[in-house]
Image (tube, rainbow, N blue to C red):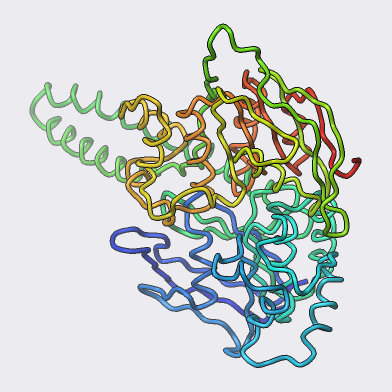
Length: 488
C-alpha cells in the first residue's frame, strides 16, 4: 500500500525524441512510495521513453524530474534482452546487474530464481533459452538488484499461463514502488491501484485512481460530457447567428445589437471544448492466401517427428501429421519445451522430421522481431515483401495498421515494439503467404487490436502454425489440430 512519501515527481517535464518528435509536453504527476501503477498508452506513445526518463537514460528537454531521496535504487525489466548480452552465460548476465563483484552471486541467483519460479543452468548462454525463459530472466535481473523502484516493461510477453499467475501473485504481495507497462488488462487489474495514461495525441500525462477499466469508463463519460457541452454551444451559436442576421437587416440601433451578438458567437466559439481523442484501433483486415497451380496436391507441411526439450535436453518423438491447405495447428506446451525453436526451424525448413512443400511461400511472425533488419526503413521492408510492388497498396495497407508516412520513413529499430508487431502483420498481408508461422503474435500488441487480429487469423484460409500463451486470444481462432510438446 502506498504511503505519504512522494518518490517520483515530474514537474512540467517536456521530452522530445530527436528533432520535432514530442513524447511529453509539460507532464506533471507524482507517485508515492509503495504505489503500484499501470502505465498505459497507444503503441508508439512513448511509454518506454518515460521509463528511460525515470532511470536517467533520457534527460528532460524542459522541466524537472525528482527522485526522492536521490539515493533510491531503480531497476528495470526491459521488453527484450539486449543483443549484446545474448552470448553471455546466465552467471555472466547477472554479474552485469552490479557495479561491484558479488562473491555470493550464485546464491543470489538461486534465491531470485525461486521468486520467478524457474530453474536454469548457470553455464548456459542466454540465446539458448526460450522466449518465456528469457522473460523470467529479465524479471529476475531487475529483482536481484533489490530496487526501491521496480519498472516492468511488458513483463507477461512470452510467459505461459503458470508464469503469468506466479508473477501476478508476486506483485500482489510486493511492498515497494512498481510501475508496469502492459497491454494485458486482466493482469494489470489484479494488483495496480492507479494509472498513468500517456495520450499519444496531446503528449500529456493523465493520472487516475483505480484500475484500467475504471479509467476507460471515466474517459468515456468525459468524452460524452464534452460532446454534449459542444452540442449545446453549437445550438446556441446557430440561434444567435440567425438572430444577428435578422437584426442586421432591420437597420438602425438593431445593427449594433447584431454586432454584439456576432461578438458573443465568436466568444462562444472559443469556449468549444476539444473533445478527447481515444486510441485508434487497427481496421479489420484479411491475410490473402497464396494461389497454387491446379496440380498442387494440397500438402503444405508434412511432419514425421517433433523435438521437445526435457530437462534442457532435446527429445525426438514420432508424429505422423500431414497439414493441408486451410488447416490451423496450435503448438502448445510450457515455457522452455521448445515451441519457438520448433517454429524457427520450420520457417527455415531445417526442422528434423518436418518438410514444407517447395511451392509454398511461408510468412513468419517472430516473437522478438529479430528477422527484421533494424537499419532498414519500414517502407523498404514492406516493399520487399510484395511480389508486385504497388506504392498505393503498400501505403493504404500500412495506414490500416496505424503506420503513417512518418513511421514508414523510420528505420525499423526506431519503431516501438508495438509498431514492429503491427509492421509484421502488415508485411504478412502484403506477402500473401500459403503458410503462416506465428510465434506469440500478441506480444507488444495493444489489447484493443487483439480481437481484430484474432478474427483475421480465424478467417485465414491458408495453413497456419501458431504458438500463443494467451487463452482468450486462442479461443477466438479455429484450430484443427493441437501439438502439445509436453505430451510427447
